[in-house]
Length: 492
Ligand SMILES: *[C@@H]1O[C@H](CO)[C@@H](O)[C@H](O)[C@H]1NC(C)=O
Ligand SMILES: *[C@@H]1O[C@H](CO)[C@@H](O)[C@H](O)[C@H]1NC(C)=O
Ligand SMILES: *[C@@H]1O[C@H](CO)[C@@H](O)[C@H](O)[C@H]1NC(C)=O
Ligand SMILES: [Ca+2]
Image (cartoon, rainbow, N blue to C red; front, side, top):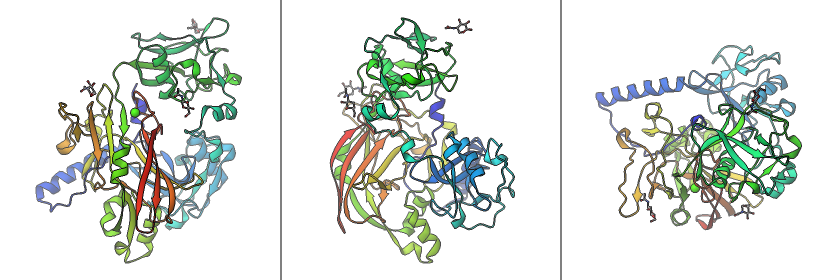
């Protein structure tokens, strides 16, 4: 049921501590490295991702092999290969375009594949012919990439219902809508069914079904909040000619009948899976503290010498890697960082817990901490045209109770492999002093920008509401001074 969570990879940040190693210490570290290695082997070999693009739909291709990500060299890279990559990532291959010469920035990792020949029938790029893992004479300027779609083809998370309605031809669900849950093991779970105009109970297609829709279903039925949004055949039910397709909610509706669906596609569900939910009364609710964000934000110029851990975790802009590669005195160069404190409060009725069991947490050597879950905060800066001009690393978190309301005992702590989580009425605080708690704005000209800081930005982890998960602020940047002001809290 919780497999959705596991798809997330994780990063958590504590402090980068430098210690002189005793033999014990070295042994311990080695054991931990082995552990990390073993953990990584559990990831799927041959998996791919796109990096450096404007979104997940484009970028240089990276492939996972033997637990580490590597680039692909652009020799012999053409549209046949691009189509396979796009198909493998679930995009239509029609618009696939290959890119060469590190179109999306120089390769940051070793080259895993070179001289790839595919005949076009392969399901995965790793099954095409190539020179052999790691066999390559390519330099970082030769990374192969793809564009699988244009941004306008990709549904924007922030769009309003009215433009969703025109773009996807969505129709409002009937105002006298009746819904029910069917075939659950307990009354608070099951597949979702809607009574259609002919009075027949029909199923809902699982394609695109997310926590946003599930949350409104639970709310409408008076069953609290969505614990899980499932696309499954586990709860039985059949796809019929009446099956609702493309059901979409914004997440702030008070009743499911305020949501939309795609009337034209009725009965045409691509997958065989149906929409199902599991509801619960107690639920965490993360809130981003925008006051703390405004008060703590400031600029700092930091020599790259002190950013080596951060560079390993990709916490600086890509130009830093160019400087590191091309300039022998790179460690004396400085980066300008917009630093701020992210304080995340759990105002819900249940603890917020990582879902990955402790034995699968990943040890991060450089920062000397465990990554317990791919939680996710995003830090973005946009120019006046709304284009993203700088971004923070999807910060890694080590969940703990740093500060609690009076009378609440902190229970979660990251140190010494402790239990991770955020208790109700406690805050997890990533102070601006923490490594990677910043946006690298070295490449920005002074001016007026917008800044967005969001927790759980993709709505992947269940909460009571997502309407308080992001702070949207003004960022004023002068030559030597920066300030973050006028934050409002909204959905990511
Ligand atoms: C689904 O279809 C099967 C086979 O046609 C049928 O036996 C079953 O009763 C159907 N289930 C529902 C819930 O309509
Ligand atoms: C939900 O969000 C939309 C778009 O942001 C807004 O127009 C609408 O008023 C909100 N609805 C409620 C009930 O808050
Ligand atoms: C959390 O704080 C709220 C408001 O102060 C209070 O009503 C609630 O009972 C507290 N919950 C817990 C579990 O401490
Ligand atoms: Ca929330």
